Image (cartoon, rainbow, N blue to C red; front, side, top):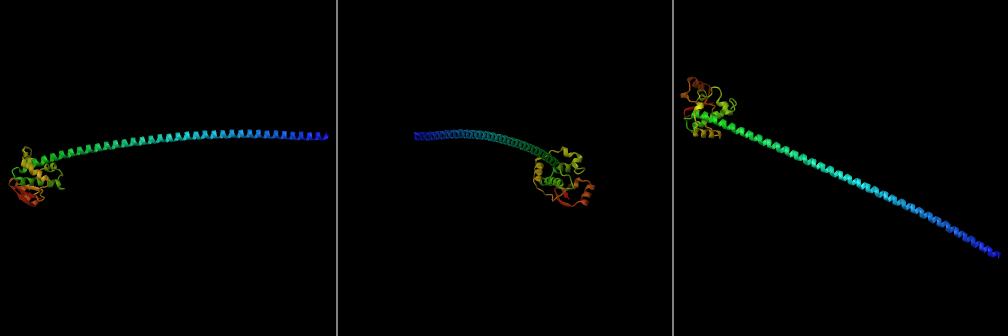
Length: 233
């Protein structure tokens, strides 16, 4: 009987130990489960926080790229505006240049027209009774003076120089009517026809005063004689 009690006690003790052991294991499981749950929640929170950070970073990046595009667009727009302004400025300068050139051409043509008219009138007054070659040679003398450093550089300056041409002094220059032959002679002279051998002076001996004739013969060299005129330089 006592042996049975001992066995029973031993079994009880074993059972108690197993129960206690089971109890202890359950607590550890619970603790482990609780720890795992906390760890899992922490991981989830970390992942969520990381996801939020990534989302914020993406939004910031998108904002930055948007700002860059806006700035790039602004820069392109500014460049286009500057290019357009530069084109407008260049076009305006080109228009002004063309307008200036047109004015210069107009002035030049007007000056040429006036110079031609003066040359035609003095040739008519001096050689209106000569043939075409005689008229061309008088025009040659006028143009030779224009080209020379010792006379004015315009037809007007040469023709109206003090006491150089008698038709200016006696007024016949203003009274003549220019003929077509004289116009033709002047045209040829202006285009380069030259029979004068570089003459800078001419005179009609029969129509000149003795003092003028003496000065021509004394101070100048005769290079040619044609019609009623003698040519000197």
